[in-house]
View 1: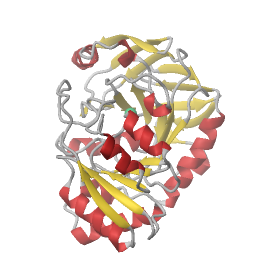
View 2: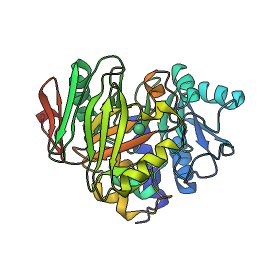
View 3: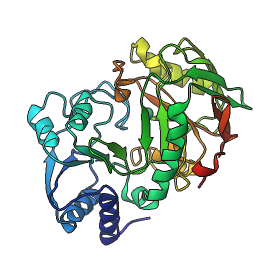
Length: 348
Ligand SMILES: [Fe+2]
């Protein structure tokens, strides 16, 4: 459903207020060819409503045409800002960047964050932004889950479909996404509502069965027949199943990069406003699939890079795979059971 300009602007004021935007601060709205014009206008006006200074930085799309499809996550690691020192310096000298382009997983993003600039990514269409407006309650539940994940030494995930996967934890930091940026150097994504970390190197092990109805992003479709992944020493070494498995295998092979088969971030969804069914309601070019990544109780499995965690695995092949009906435990304590969130302080 369409969202009015005034409503979207008021939501931006809400999210920027949660992000502690102060009148003395300066904001850069980063855009490129695919940035949503209504979001650009609403975000820019909301910054001015709050008395802060704002400028727009528009860069042409990157020249890399090796990826298939239109989703910005198809190729990660290289962005339209790669090598553009003037643009990077402008972002570093601002207090807050509103990213309507998609800088995620890039060395440029890490450099900007290290300068203390906070960055908020928002590329979903206005109606998804309006449906999944972040709140302090989202933050509270993600923080409660993060306390558990930070202290954990092991993660185990099982499902009736055949998943039996485990890994050790502690080598990498946490990714806590609750939808706003309330601390210096913080990055977040509106909409979101989940958390993750990366397995210790070469410890991920077992079987992950991507079941019917689970989704693979950026393919943006529901899997029709189970795909069985065999995982040894931190890497996917086997992909078995029907046509969905063939599609997945060919896509990953296309990058000719063994690091694309590494296990990447692992976590669970905590956002009741995000819906499993949403992916079926949009054209593929319309949405990034954040409903899928964040929906309440999903196990978010992923493959590929760890640069976002400060690692050196800068592979362009990244898959997010939100799975239903999984049971995830940390050091034996259940966080989810068959797709439902268990700890009282994480429940919606
Ligand atoms: Fe991801």
